Length: 324
Image 1: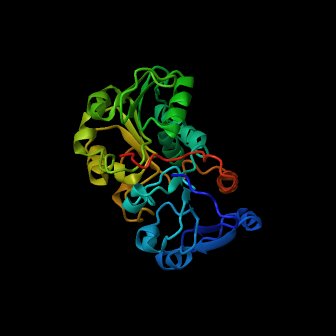
Image 2: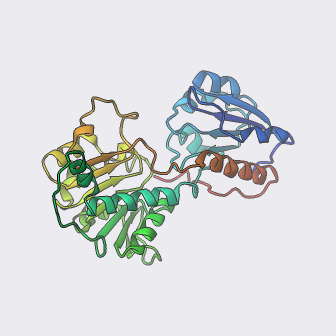
Image 3: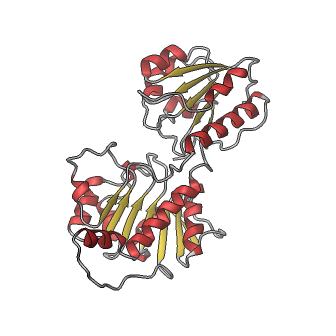
């Protein structure tokens, strides 16, 4: 049921410990009372009377522990595409609106994925290693045209990945909750239960799905065994979707040809973790979508959403809380 925004709403911003408030958020003080929190204790103190919660820490578990203090909450916004940190059972069961940052990171993440695909095909990583050794070694490399990409998670980010992949001549397929009979950006979109059947057909498998009970541990030994030995795995979704130990075994024993990982089960990845030394593996620090100016873009989006909410207009980027 829609709720009427109060005349002077209270907005609490949940940031990561040690972070400053995001740039530009102070503009909200013209129309709202602004509070901040950084952990469960400070959130528990800030939540009473809070109407809007803006979460900038996508790893936080504070809301789960502070939830009993949320007495007037009407809307939660996350400045990330993933909402797993705040989609606790109490939020799922409530009539509180939940929105995310869909649209901000889509293109940047798709560019990252396409860059990794081209880097694998053109052997850029081996070129760099040979350069460090001052070794001249001529090699033939692959073409990307005609290669097949399977995008696991055919939402907004997955769709942008498909568009860029098709632009360079690749054949794109998607995996979604349910099959789609026609889609303008994918050659075909298959249901989740068809994943294992489609994995052997893909040269590149891109994980772009949100973390849910259905996707956690999705890429286990069985799934990785389904992939071609020449295939590469690229994960820009969430780390726990891929079982790390299974992936390490797949890379070390040559079940797959390589991996590019931007997200991990444990973040930050410890310096002693064996993934750093895994063969044919490229790692980045959960930054695939972080372009110059992304922090400002996120706050611009949230402030625009806030004014829509305050005027009683429909919010953009509403998340289906029943998603599983």
